[in-house]
View 1 (tube, rainbow, N blue to C red):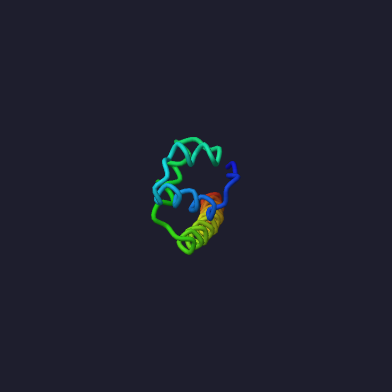
View 2 (view 1 turned 120 degrees about the horizontal axis):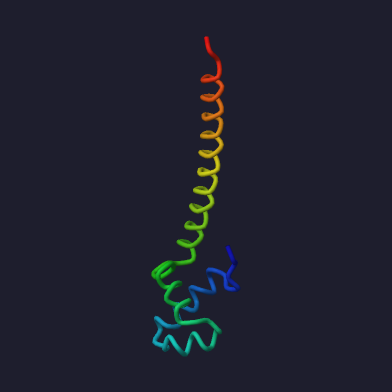
Length: 89
Protein backbone atom coordinates (compact mmCIF):
# COMPACT_ATOMS: atom_id res chain seq x y z
CA UNK A 1 0.00 0.00 0.00
CA UNK A 2 1.27 3.45 -0.87
CA UNK A 3 2.38 5.57 2.08
CA UNK A 4 0.96 9.04 2.40
CA UNK A 5 3.32 11.96 2.37
CA UNK A 6 1.43 13.25 5.42
CA UNK A 7 1.71 11.77 8.90
CA UNK A 8 -1.39 11.13 10.96
CA UNK A 9 -0.65 14.22 13.06
CA UNK A 10 -0.41 16.36 9.92
CA UNK A 11 -3.73 14.94 8.70
CA UNK A 12 -5.30 15.86 12.05
CA UNK A 13 -3.93 19.39 11.66
CA UNK A 14 -5.47 19.72 8.21
CA UNK A 15 -8.83 18.46 9.49
CA UNK A 16 -8.67 20.93 12.39
CA UNK A 17 -8.11 23.83 9.98
CA UNK A 18 -11.44 23.10 8.31
CA UNK A 19 -13.14 22.61 11.69
CA UNK A 20 -11.87 26.07 12.68
CA UNK A 21 -13.82 27.67 9.85
CA UNK A 22 -11.62 27.58 6.75
CA UNK A 23 -13.07 26.32 3.49
CA UNK A 24 -12.29 22.80 2.36
CA UNK A 25 -11.21 23.90 -1.13
CA UNK A 26 -8.85 26.52 0.33
CA UNK A 27 -7.19 24.08 2.73
CA UNK A 28 -6.89 21.40 0.04
CA UNK A 29 -5.26 23.83 -2.38
CA UNK A 30 -2.83 25.03 0.29
CA UNK A 31 -1.72 21.48 1.17
CA UNK A 32 -1.86 20.17 -2.43
CA UNK A 33 -4.43 17.45 -1.79
CA UNK A 34 -7.69 16.68 -3.54
CA UNK A 35 -11.03 17.22 -1.88
CA UNK A 36 -11.74 13.50 -2.13
CA UNK A 37 -8.55 12.85 -0.14
CA UNK A 38 -9.72 15.32 2.49
CA UNK A 39 -13.10 13.61 2.79
CA UNK A 40 -11.47 10.16 2.96
CA UNK A 41 -9.29 11.43 5.80
CA UNK A 42 -12.32 12.95 7.48
CA UNK A 43 -14.15 9.62 7.29
CA UNK A 44 -11.16 7.76 8.74
CA UNK A 45 -9.75 10.27 11.26
CA UNK A 46 -12.65 12.63 11.94
CA UNK A 47 -13.10 13.31 15.66
CA UNK A 48 -9.87 11.56 16.66
CA UNK A 49 -7.05 12.89 18.76
CA UNK A 50 -3.36 12.04 18.48
CA UNK A 51 -3.67 9.42 21.23
CA UNK A 52 -6.61 7.83 19.41
CA UNK A 53 -4.52 7.53 16.26
CA UNK A 54 -1.65 5.99 18.21
CA UNK A 55 -4.04 3.43 19.69
CA UNK A 56 -5.51 2.73 16.22
CA UNK A 57 -2.01 2.09 14.83
CA UNK A 58 -1.25 -0.27 17.74
CA UNK A 59 -4.50 -2.16 17.19
CA UNK A 60 -3.82 -2.48 13.46
CA UNK A 61 -0.37 -3.92 14.19
CA UNK A 62 -1.81 -6.35 16.73
CA UNK A 63 -4.45 -7.40 14.20
CA UNK A 64 -1.76 -7.99 11.57
CA UNK A 65 0.17 -10.23 14.00
CA UNK A 66 -2.94 -12.19 14.94
CA UNK A 67 -3.81 -12.77 11.29
CA UNK A 68 -0.27 -14.03 10.65
CA UNK A 69 -0.49 -16.36 13.67
CA UNK A 70 -3.85 -17.70 12.48
CA UNK A 71 -2.51 -18.33 8.97
CA UNK A 72 0.48 -20.24 10.38
CA UNK A 73 -1.70 -22.36 12.64
CA UNK A 74 -4.21 -23.07 9.87
CA UNK A 75 -1.35 -24.18 7.61
CA UNK A 76 0.04 -26.49 10.32
CA UNK A 77 -3.44 -27.88 10.96
CA UNK A 78 -3.95 -28.60 7.26
CA UNK A 79 -0.55 -30.31 7.05
CA UNK A 80 -1.36 -32.53 10.04
CA UNK A 81 -4.75 -33.47 8.59
CA UNK A 82 -3.10 -34.36 5.28
CA UNK A 83 -0.56 -36.51 7.13
CA UNK A 84 -3.29 -38.34 9.06
CA UNK A 85 -5.33 -38.96 5.91
CA UNK A 86 -2.30 -40.50 4.15
CA UNK A 87 -1.66 -43.00 6.93
CA UNK A 88 -3.88 -46.02 6.44
CA UNK A 89 -3.91 -47.78 9.76
